Length: 149
Ligand SMILES: Cc1cc2nc3c(=O)[nH]c(=O)nc-3n(C[C@H](O)[C@H](O)[C@H](O)COP(=O)(O)O)c2cc1C
Image (cartoon, rainbow, N blue to C red; front, side, top):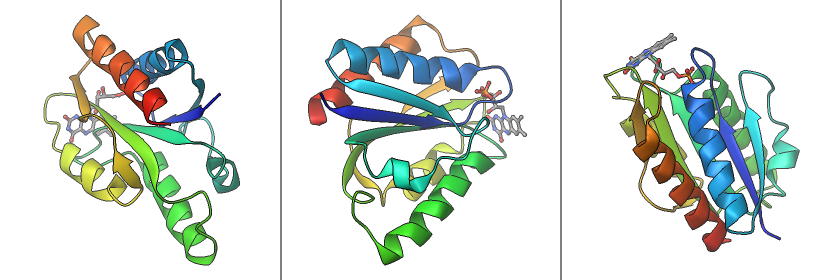
């Protein structure tokens, strides 16, 4: 069974967490094992990151940028891959963003995570609480990531 990591930051209302949950549902329905990690609750050990086959990265828009927890992950990733890139590069990945109406973090999100591998599907964006259409788009992204493994 392929493994998917859903790595996200959610802190304010749980909006990004709801999107992450739907991605996990879609991936499981398509036969993958999905693990969800909220960077607001824990800093992901970069050694654990190596073992996943695919990953979905999600962030709320914070000041037209990604949340600090996701930036910390990227910093850890960059330093770790310089000495040993095994399992750190070239994963299929998906992106999702929650915002309050501006949503300008989409561009830095796509630029920063562009170095991680090959993006699967389009970036799923949501204003405020994710509605049914957003949640279905998240499930679809989860299915696509499972299929990409
Ligand atoms: C510190 C902070 C900065 C924010 N900056 C922006 C912003 O620049 N643009 C925007 O559209 N939303 C902004 N928001 C709104 C959040 O992106 C939005 O409420 C999001 O859905 C929160 O996700 P969460 O409930 O998963 O934490 C900001 C929220 C916080 C707490």
